[in-house]
Amino acid sequence: MRVGGRPYRTLWVAEDGRTVQIIDQTRLPHAFEVAALRTLDDAATAIRTMQVRGAPLIGVTAAYGLALALAEDPGDASLARACDTLLATRPTAVNLRWALETMQAALGDLPPSERVDAAYQRAGRLADEDVALCRAIGEHGAKLLEDAPRRGGAVLQVLTHCNAGWLATVDWGTALAPVYVAHERGVPIHVWVDETRPRNQGASLTAWELLQHGVPHTVIADNAGGHLMRSGRVDLCITGSDRTTATGDVCNKIGTYLKALAARDNEVPFYVALPYSTIDWTLDDGSRIPIEERDPSEVGRVRGRVAGGAVLEIDVLPEGSPAANPGFDVTPSRLVTGLVTERGVCEASREGLLGLYPERRAETS
Ligand code: MRU
Image 1 (cartoon, protein in one colour):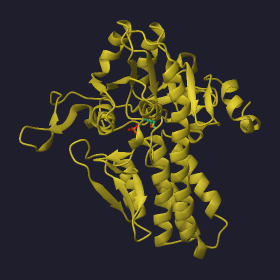
Image 2: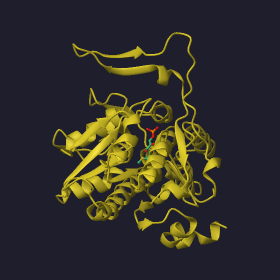
Image 3: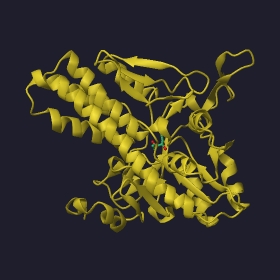
């Protein structure tokens, strides 16, 4: 996607063939900065501190993190330690585990002398594959958007939560890929962007990338979505997912569940877009998904630009009030109208998913 008219991915390998470059998402929207990852620790820190975030991008960054670790030491112990370090960075998005398992399967049997080049190649293929998967999600989802009934007029009103755009993937995004494809095809579209407290991925990231691409949008407080749905101003909701069970339960950024409840009460279709790497075929029940508990200080502290240009953090809680910060919630499959994947759209159910991924039938009961 384009930034200032120039095409970018969210991460790429520098000309030295080893350093991994990322867009530092903790600096957006007030500064566009590229950061360099040179070691395993750099990659683990980038994921933990959310310089890179979003389920698919976390997975691909972890794959490159392994390559960086092997460039320092290609031995078996180093490979195992790097996997453990990366796996511990963020618990909810299953793409992290999937990417590490994919890399281990490709590298584990190779002699150490061949591992570094193979790791960079495999990670590169995962990055390219992510772009293709997201573009395919965009194609399938765009048809849904084109066909969706518009309640209020010619412009399709879409509501999204968090950032499941190109910044959350290598390119295109999951939930926003259909929006970009539909926009590219001339479908008149407007996006309601949930701010997504406490870290404001909607206000800081989704708004920024939609702005870069000229997609009409409006940022709303998280609490406004129900009111907008009740007043007929939302035609369709679409979000991403950090982990989807084999039965179609969806774990996504905290607050997604409330939007799904409001959508159901107002008969607004609620779609979730995800690539196959986000499906956890080992789980039948969303309540078993590990929910990341983040630092409570994120709830009490807001970052923003003040008059004069400086970017500061301010405290919004009274000193002494405790805060809690669960990072994700689970939306049960019954509230999900459909799952949009790279293979098409299906019902959020075991049979729906197996219809698109029949090769997984043996793994699920
Ligand atoms: O905590 P984050 O910012 O990594 O959470 C991101 C989300 O919840 C996204 O909606 C999800 O990863 C789907 S991304 C394409």
